[in-house]
Length: 288
Image (cartoon, rainbow, N blue to C red; front, top):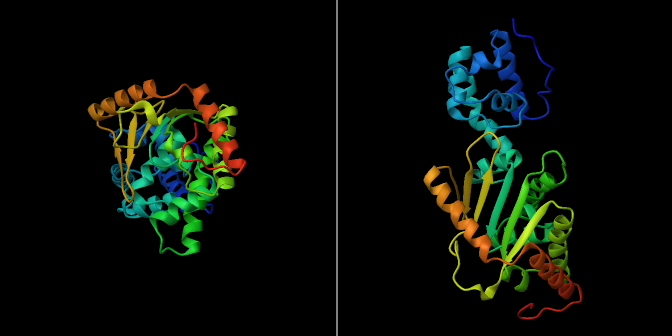
């Protein structure tokens, strides 16, 4: 007989309801986590997270659950519904990243075109969303902005905060997309996180010439219990890469890029100086 664990409040959300139902059926069948997972490729931690509504259910595991528990396709049929609920206002192609960020041991980003979502202020996020969707309603834009800002909770939880390293191109701080006061607030946000030891920023200066990853923005995510994952993104699409050979190639390119960037100390000083310039209402063609 499998002992029933602490009850999960399934009324909280679709994923927690789905997870609660999975655990209920598993325990009703008298299966431990190990016994349930026999024949699959997933860990007990992974399954436990699903049962608590904290991870998405992969299709193959949903099919495994239906076969193991005799649930007539229930978990497979509802798998996509749960996935949609988990990603909320985010694009479908960003779904894996949303989950991966929460479980990553480290996150490393290279952003040559815009400041990454995890670091954006509301003003910056709103400008980026509106620039990509000029005809969208204010309510739709606000929903997207709220969802983007919610991801930054990673930096507020001491126990779950991943090591976060970000490499930015100098143009992101020298060529403003916001009014000076709002640009100062955006740069201050990065400075505050850096001074709290939540992020480590580096700047690739305009003068560095040709450098690795000139044609791509990437996010490298490493995990304590899973292989690393690469995410690349364009304006209206994104792709997650787990092929070991490609991951290795991107990993090497990122390390070479880090080598041509300014040191974290010099980079932070440059960001602080730029913020001060904007705070004083100055907007030069190039911030030295």
